[in-house]
Length: 131
Image (cartoon, rainbow, N blue to C red; front, side):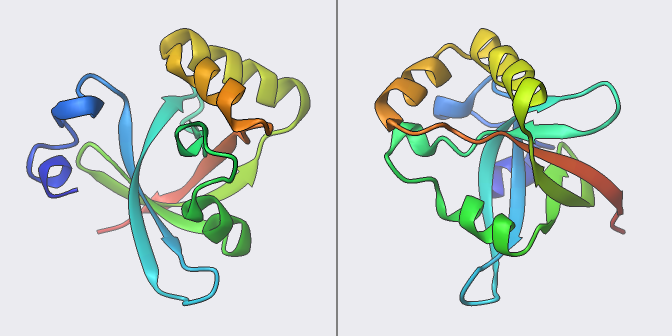
């Protein structure tokens, strides 16, 4: 996260070249802020989609449980920081976004296969920039 913030959202290592954001959720049980990196897709209307794959684990990542309990989140993309409302995509919207993500990063197909569960697609709708 320090590398992300120091370099305006650009990182090296396994995330090099990925569309990466920092997602800050409120802990479902603790109520404390929790920040994690996540791959995303940008929609033309300014919304972003994230994919709680947990690397293909059988359970979703903690950040997914957090945002379902507290759907207002903070998002950092590049140098922009904003509040957003997280909602789960369903039906054809979910399928369209998932297909785009698999086309952009084929390892997500492997994550889906390993997970043995449908991987949700979460849409982040911007609510306003933070100072």
